[in-house]
Image 1 (cartoon, each protein chain N blue to C red):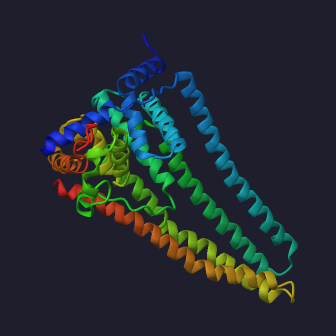
Image 2 (image 1 turned 60 degrees about the horizontal axis):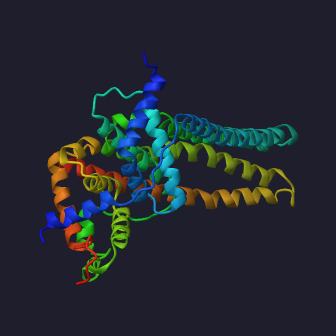
Length: 200
Length: 181
């Protein structure tokens, strides 16, 4: 048997396989679209709520705690968390556009589309996106934890030790996990680039 | 004069009438799990319907439909694969590695359904681009059209197809026949 005959046989089998018909009516599609947009809105609202709760909590500390070091720490944490949330919102917005605005799906070929998607995900885990996130959040938490440790008497300063400990533990972990993810995406981008080069 | 919405609805209906089964096969090839497959199929249909709002016939309807479907599937799978590290391979690696259905060409004696299951399993091990090439090939699309959909040059597609044919012939030999050898 030649490879052409064998492949043709499999190809016929593939095309003849029974497929349960599936179709959505335009009203169903419109309902589905509305539902999808509502789901995305709810997800965004959760992020905004977290942001408000965090600002309220540290805002309360800013007013209630008399120690100026803790106040500075609170302000830095508020800014750091707000920056982190803003990044997540921006990333979600990009993904939302990809899901709800479908015109780009038809005008972009698969190779370019796949590469762009991978690059977008990689960029979230490295470079300016990653370091600005870490730079905004971790020093703030360290300052807040350190301030709590030295400004409050024992045992009220114990949460400060916890914040410091967790922050110092999380920092290398966050860098390491983001590095692994970005490297993973980069490997896949390299594979796509290899295909692009191979056809030149 | 037809409105944008009615044209969009008409184009969608025509697309489903012509390519509905291909979309079902595509969803199955990207997602084994039945619920996930259903979600993906709905997502593809939604993307297709939405996309027709801006369809300007600069490429053929078939190219547009396959691009939207494959890109929507890629996006869906990248989203669901977040945090998972399933290694995907290329057509070339499949050939080198052996693996699926390689045991004594057992496809010769198994039922057609089993051959298709093995074929789906093989497809799901492939990286998205090679997966698209093999799916388009299996759907009977020629190399030039596969190039339009994927962005890969027809010459390179032809090389890939050659490998695909060899793999299919060797691993699924006589898969369509029910005779026992």
